Length: 124
Image 1 (tube, rainbow, N blue to C red):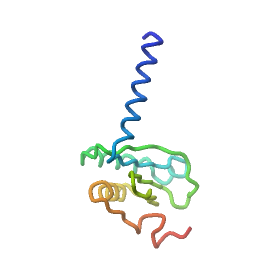
Image 2: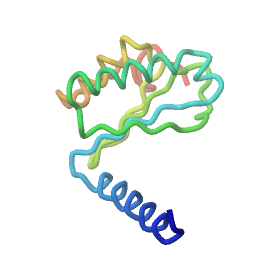
Image 3: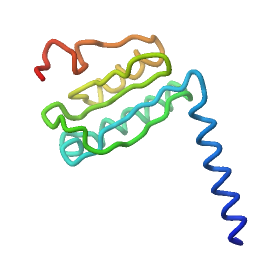
């Protein structure tokens, strides 16, 4: 592939990504991928979320991997973001919880407060 063809292909990929983020109903799921997250089971959580997204046809959901958030005792952490709403940070997420919280947030627009960093069981 010629250098200019490569350039145009990369440019088109970048523009498509920008277009995706402009969707009004886009929900971003940020997963923390620090060493402590991985040790706490984040890879299983990601797998469960990916399966749930595909099975339920949640095509407005984008998974993004991030680095360490600094809350090692509360890992795995998952942050859900939707335009016009405050981000919601869930802590100590298991694969089972991941499926439930994702479905509740995306399909029912409901936050499970007890599982968030603001939950009654969390002491910051």
